[in-house]
Image (cartoon, rainbow, N blue to C red; front, top):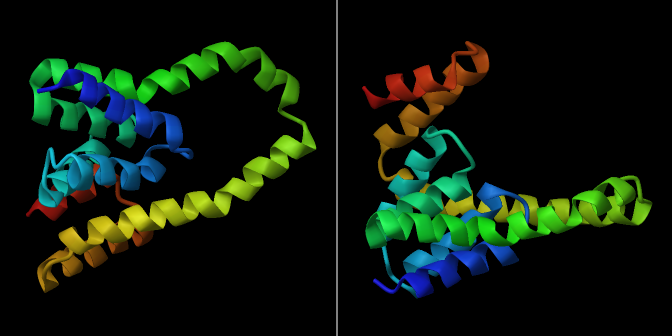
Length: 166
């Protein structure tokens, strides 16, 4: 396993994607499934599911699981550091500037302009994962019933996940 390549791949994902974990999923998929072929699309879908159930941001959890899958414990450490490195450095450097410019109308406008692109990235990730997840009537039925319990009965999401396993 080339740990430098793993680090650089996740560094690129963490550096050039904007909008949080779900917005990163299409970039992660392209890099690890399509470009480097480290895992299959089915494995990627499973990793996303596990990443959503475990505490923490889905992008960091995904990087950790993918890194472990392709490079063991050292791979998980390398991938996780790669995906958080740029954000960590930028927040460290700009923490004072954020306080200064948080009410700037141009900054607010810029962030508002990014929202439609972020929504498109999240929808792209959903559609890509849905192709793998919804393979038969049973999987669609489980989703509809689970959504019904979540939104009408206000059941706790973890309870719905456990019930969905049956």
